[in-house]
Image (tube, rainbow, N blue to C red; front, side, top):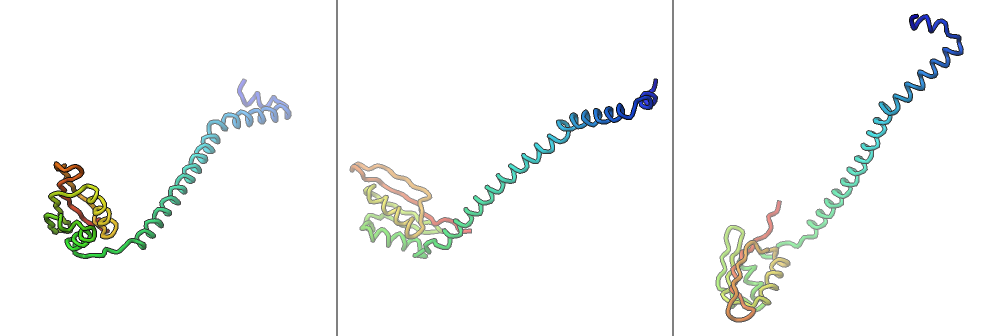
Length: 161
């Protein structure tokens, strides 16, 4: 007997029950196979959007902070690097300890034959704070006198973009 013959032999009530059973089976199989992956994917995308939104907010905040820092940055006080170092060292009473100064190509090289390490650190800090000159290279060699070093420093300003 063919499926068509079996269907025609069923009563109206049995046909409704068979149709409902097929709908329930299709829905039951369709849920885990179709609907659940769709909703799971949507949940994942929603979480990704939230994470991207948080990253975007953080980047915008960082950009605003950078803009504020640039607006409030101290202007460079001395255009000539050599005179900037001479002024800073003279202000701290270290000018006579300076053995040589060579300024070229946006850098300045300093040599102290003998300097107290406790006097050198504030000079470096002041040059960074006041003149935006930062140490790029440094060679410190201990001397016989305690706390005294021979210092060779190369300082430069940060490159601006």
